[in-house]
Image (cartoon, rainbow, N blue to C red; front, side, top):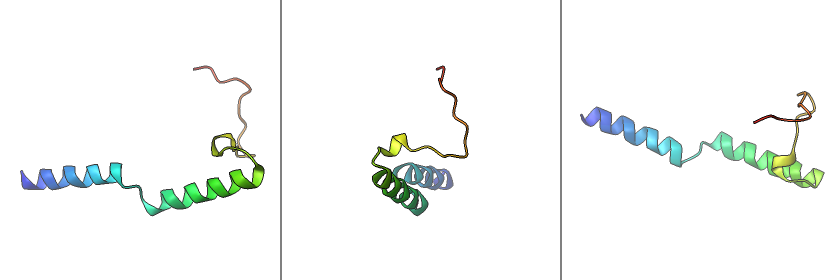
Amino acid sequence: MEKRGNKLKNIAKRFVKKPQTYYNMEREFKYWAREEGVSIYDLEDPVIQYPEEIVW
């Protein structure tokens, strides 16, 4: 039972504490959003072909 408790604790930690790669990516997004004068949510990858309209 103790092994299971430790595994669950480790899984919970991963949900709560983001890895360093997440913070690196977030910093990059913020940098480019500031450079482009837009929100990080408005950044687009020029390589990807986005549809004109997204149907939810």
